Image 1 (tube, helix red, strand yellow):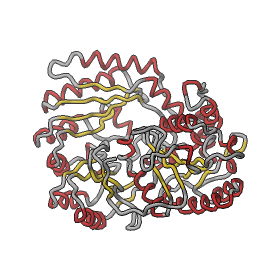
Image 2 (cartoon, one colour):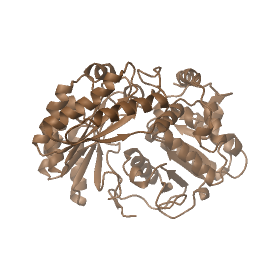
Image 3 (spheres, helix red, strand yellow):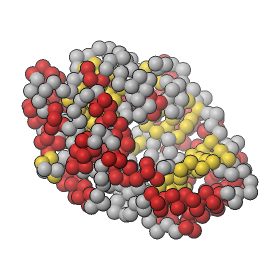
Image 4 (cartoon, rainbow, N blue to C red):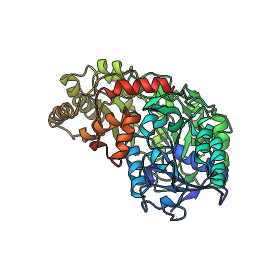
Length: 488
């Protein structure tokens, strides 16, 4: 692999551990959480090897080792669809999917972490022997110690008992009975971002989704409360890294290796109180900058200038809808006029493309709201001359959000909404936006998986990770919501 380690990591180790990211290597290399866990395991003396969908499925990146050779297999599950991929991998490696089928016999211990564990870990509960809830770095040393003892003694019942004693580890065999949660757990989502907490990429590679960019985490959590978003309800309070701490770490990295691009990872870069100071520092070091997320009402000329200086010709923002009123109901308190103002500023600096994220199927949405997406796009093109990419995604209600109980409109309604939008965009007289729309079937699958409880997780396992073979009962949502309340 064309990789460059940012920090010197210990070699070898005494605990063979497969660390799987259920997506392509480019996506895995763009996940700071995956970087953090790999580094932490290395520093704990674990013989960890990474797995992704590529370059060679079912074989590790480091040693070309088959997945089934590892006594410990864990996955970083970021999205609902990752769970399906994880299940299929285990099935292809001839590993029984249901944890209860692995209680006896020489089978690996299966675990999981990642963003899904903040939102709905029950999706993983019938398959995993253990699930680390939230920030895995908090519980990881404890889990590694327990797993070391297990490999030495071979007593799985003792392992499950021991893992289950940690408040932020869910052990379904100990905490769930007859499909119902019986023991409360603690979601680890408030860890301070101090000097002892990792903040940057563990490795650099041009094969990352962001190219050979050093990723740096500025903050976690969100002060806003957008109705559709899991961040405020699931990922903890807003926590910032001090810019002095960030600059000190970057100085160390820049002095040791060549870095051209720095990617600032944050729910919203403009909310960081020292963002201007950090951008000035990066400019003084002649580093290009990119942002994981930009909110229109916090977008400044300095941010846009930093993008342009790094060779970026495109800016990505999320209006969510073309209607001011509907946008306000989502929790985004900015207007179409402000969108025009900010994108006009970007165009004046030489940024000639904008990628705009929209949702359809929102609560209270009308056909006129859908047409408003096309109207806003036409205004942007007419007033800024920018090329537009419209990414349109169906609204999917998720646990932990303000709109968790709202309706998912269904595939037929989504197709109709897409048709309205496409028809309106054909009326564009100047350059027409590129239109990218998430498949209605894909959105339907995401919705059902988002609300899986233990019984649905079991059904998914029995169908080898193929969710379309699992019948989803709408009543499941209320049951899962109740179980999540019992869990937390």
